[in-house]
Length: 398
Image (cartoon, rainbow, N blue to C red; front, side, top):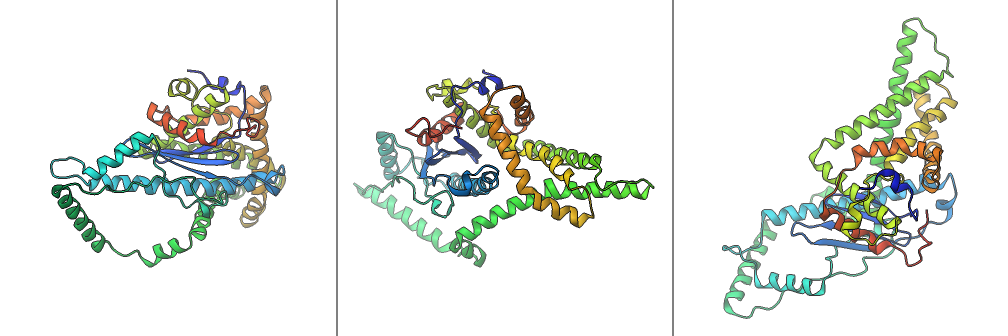
């Protein structure tokens, strides 16, 4: 296997990135995005949509960081919710299989599977990407499986029984509640509300909580008769260390969850596939497998840089009362994000001792956020990246 250093010596540094999902992942290219998931029957379901290219303030240095962070969170959360819905549907299929008593599939199902094998096509998931800020079109194509007509009395009877069972299930299904119905009618509001909750959780856990704990330490020092100046850099350093410890503990606890482990494996497949593409390799499982699951241009590296940069930026404003400290950190957070994003871009574009030092902590933390994928996961990652590779090889340069 090629190590992480090899990943930095690529023939190309691409702007294509991705995010691991539940039993799949999403890849974002300069013009398109693709979401690929593995269904319970082993088939890969693929959805491809156009992307609106970055323009306006989304291309201005030190402004593009916060803007792209929020927009990509919206895309990622949308894809994550879709993958969760697909996984739930697959579980329902397993719990309520549409098989006859002897376990044989119906003739209509067999015809559909045969048609899909003949066309060698991927199933496309139903998508509502029009609500995403990154999209303005629907999926490129949809494969619709139509039930074939019955050819004998036995098939007709089986279809009648199946239809009766389906109607009975529909009658017993509960109507959606008022809250669920409201969310169905206001998908954009629900999406941006979810983004706000996710951002709020991160801000509270990684920004505000460390500040409050540091104020508690300051109060304890003062109570013991000590003196702490408002510009004390040591307290800012303590706050930063608390923030980093909380972040690492959060990643460690997440990595202990069985459900998250498979997500981390798909994350590793994303990195391997991008590395193989950057090296100019043909995208096959055999070629992709040999690359490292660690990649310098990863969201984990960005998050760690946010922790480090916040130490320096927050130290400049000193420490005041707890409420003032919290307000100052909220106001300075876009600046911290902007600087961190530019550092990630810098580290990803150049390969020298300074950029390697910048990338080193993020690569180390990827031991928590990635895992070695199996070949089936690599197949999903390859299926996701191929549609987003642009025709112009220069349009996705990092």
